Length: 379
Image 1 (tube, rainbow, N blue to C red):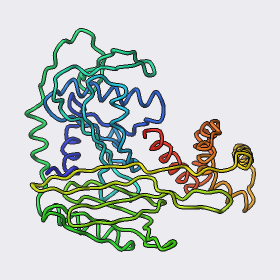
Image 2: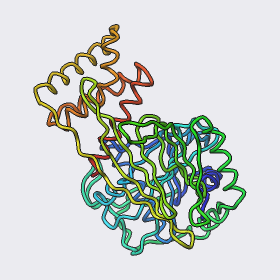
Image 3: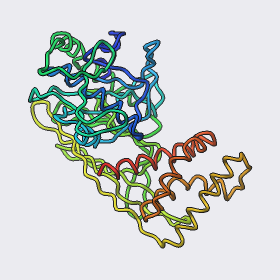
């Protein structure tokens, strides 16, 4: 089993990106341009490495090769994006890898592009941004470039990728160090661990609270220690955790409502099932059903949110009531959109910079709403 933290360190030891690995400060798949550039790199790495894994490491200062980190990203449906836009798409996996020197809310993103079972060339199946349908990309050094005359795939990297992965194999020392590190770093949040199938070690922590006979956890952190992969992290959401001898289940809830009348709605259930012979599988089930409200009341909320954003643009002072309304604005914009007010999403996206400049808390609530929106769109 590969220790992903060691793997990243070994990849970064190759300071220059290559035909089997790329590094990014960040990716942005919420815009057409960001999606297109991400797909271009997936396409190029897949075509350049038909017989071995390729990697994209996210959260790296390219100039100095320093680990900066990015926000936790848990979109299990990112494969859907690749399948929608690429012909002969590779299987990809996005994982969140914690590093001890990073803040708890930061990780390094690791995208693994698996070798294809068939050797067909990967290409764009439809237009996106400035890239046209049928475009084919390959890696040349650190660049993903278009090529038109390639008829078959060639592999040059199997030996070096195999060596890098071999040097990143996990052992009992790394596993124990990982458990102790987790327990110390999360000691204020009641950390726990459990061993599955005499091999896998899961660690989790969170603040426990009871709401109407349900037990939720907030500020949840869940990690698979063997691979140094963070499976879940949230400072805001409510989470139910359950497990038996074979599986570990995470059910995520979102707290939504109007005028202080909020309820918990199921968002997504993730089940990690542990098998024999050191295998495991992660399945996600989308559960969200948006709350429905009176359209007239929602139109009033929408207009009130717009007025608040206009005050932020003018740098006007807010009353205590307006400050409270501002914290709810991202979620209520989302509710408006779910109830048919399409322009609410445009206004929500345009509020990003205003909320970022206003306070860290307001911006965190914006990111939470955008994460819910992303999951809804992919499903």
